[in-house]
Length: 149
Image 1 (cartoon, rainbow, N blue to C red):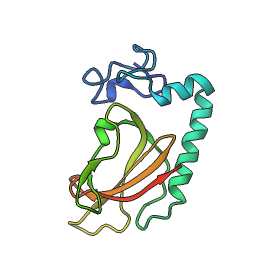
Image 2 (cartoon, one colour):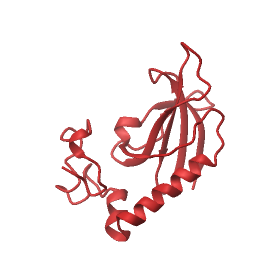
Image 3 (spheres, helix red, strand yellow):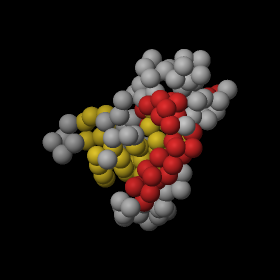
Image 4 (cartoon, rainbow, N blue to C red):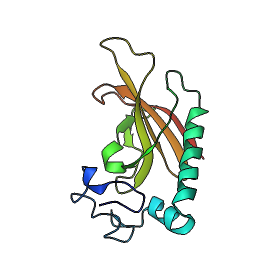
C-alpha cells in the first residue's frame, strides 16, 4: 500500500497500530489531516518534492559541527522520533506531536570515535527545523538547533 506521499505503509512500524493508512483515511492517518497529504493534494507531488529539497538545503546551511551533508529526508511519524529532551532549566519535554508527520532523518556524526558514537536526529515541518544529538542507543538527547522557518 502506497500512501498519498509515496511512502510504503506496510514498511512503517506504526501502520495499523497508530496509523490507519493515508489513502484509507483520505489523508488523515492519525485522526486529523496530515500536512504532507494536504500539501500534495493542493500543490502536487512535484511541488512537495521541491519543498522537501528546500528543507534539505536549509539543514545543510545550518553548518552544525559534525553534521554530514543531508541528502534525503523521510516522512516519519512523531511517535517514532519524538524524544524527551532537557531544557536549560532542567525540565524535560517532547517537542514534537506524536500524531503528526515530519520530514526527518538520522545521520551519524562525522567525528565519531570508536566506542563513542553520536547521531543527529533531524525533524522539520512547514514551521521549524529541529536538530538533536544523542548517543548510539538514543540516550542523552540534546537540542542542538530549534529554528523557526
